Length: 383
Image (tube, rainbow, N blue to C red; front, side, top):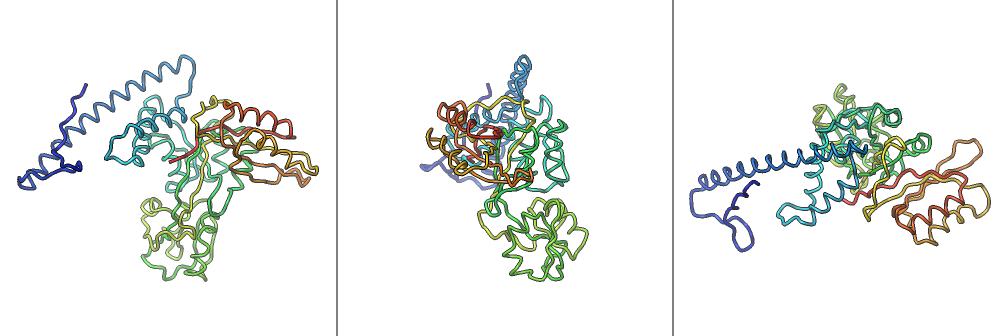
């Protein structure tokens, strides 16, 4: 066991108290102590990694999955509950996700597909969810993310499904209907769009290039500040940044990470019309590959359903949810693409099928539907 380092002297409120020595002597002493703590942390991290490797060997006996989002959420929540400070709880989750990611990678890096190129919000969502110790599968389109995951060339896919300003990402919903994929998790990002350019000013911008969702989320600002600039949709915001780096007449709407990646100036930060603009992403795997996550107490169950076209059918479909006390947190309709003016409904429910009232509601709801598909039950992103 590593002996802890005695912390520096603290005052009544827990803050370090200068001891009267010259500042350079005090700093040198504190830096030595930090070096010792860093070595202790490294020793403990390697001890944890060895234990994780042992867990991996045990999992191989019964074929348990390497990645368990419900288990990792429980670990993070327990650490946060025991956190004595001064490290803020908001910092705990990203720190522990990176630790667990590094430990998981010792058994093999997970292949995670997302919309590229490097610098997209999809990449950031993947890193936030899995940590950085992954093998990235960078895809040119959302369709390719789904295809790579369904075909098994990626272990997981990370795809956007809705934005707080512009609503659903229709293509993702359509592909969730068409392909045999299951949702095992979700994450959301506070999305800040920046106007990026190879020049440090807005002078001479003829065209703004970005993903259609980004253009829509910034349309108010663009109409006011660049009313004569063409708006051109491209496959991703990072692709727009790549194009803007090669053509000074173009400006992109993208993240600071994309600006750094492509050597662009942030001409104007945060040009999205909604200050609290968030995008929700889901993590998908081939159906049947992963066991259903255990309930955590903060879960979502996602469905796609359809009913016969008759008076009151949609109302009747929702009655089982009310009867069994299950809250519906999202309800979206999309054309069924049958050519018969039929629709399918995307529903998110609060809860998990392991809970009796949720199971009862699902059983009754299934009987009301002409089409019924459970997309997955998974922990909510509550951070």
